[in-house]
Image (cartoon, rainbow, N blue to C red; front, top):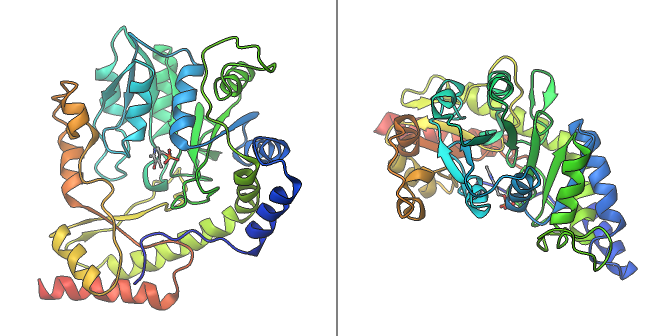
Length: 360
Ligand SMILES: *Cc1c(COP(=O)(O)O)cnc(C)c1O
């Protein structure tokens, strides 16, 4: 079976974890600080705060900006549910703006019409590793005095206008095992704002800077030194992982571009794509997925139900019609692109896809 995702962990990660375990200091400690410094440098941000998931990074980003009850945050309905849920956790309301049909990212032209006096922030998602339209989004944010929180959970190292994602506004990254780099579970908030960084670090630790002095309501959302030790090694390998993903994507696109029934992913000219997923628009999507499964090729649907259509959101009286997202949910299929694929794997994927459309 060719899996849809596979974390690449080696001896360096094992050694790094062993070192932390042997030290006996296994909670948040010096490795977390080292990882934060390395990650902030990597993204070109002044500060970073490590947490225990991407969801926590999004949640804390909103809280650190003071977003809560009575506020609205405009985001994409075509994402993993954590994006919108992080807004709900704060008591604020997620407001969905439809996506672009080519990048699957929030459509800047649809954002403006969703702005109300209650809007406090825009939360674009850099879906599949392709940056959202940050030029237009930052302009809208500036014109309307809105905060920007980037869901960069799928786009470590991706660039837009020569700047890394997560450095435009406040960034949130995930290090879940299927992501472009991992710490097992883990996340990171990035920012150039000292106050936001300090607040984020307090919120992750029960609202305290000084032990047993709690200045605000917080949570326990800390990262461990065990996770940070893995993260430090993975961060050193990230650019290598990314170029392998990009090369794999190139091979897949070269093989699939002539296939009738498939629309391969695009990369906009002012962007780099880090291919967290290689996602095509496919005719007879579900049949293709079953056919590939029979050929021992794993695929994924990211995502089969847009967030506003999820039962939990229906219950909250969401009745939006967001046709571009709803159509994408019926048609997208992610096929393997991860760094451990061999040439033969990639050829098999291309040949099997071609075979399907010849037969169907
Ligand atoms: C993975 C992911 C998250 C959540 O990250 P976790 O580490 O799983 O909490 C949020 N948003 C997007 C777009 C993601 O892909």
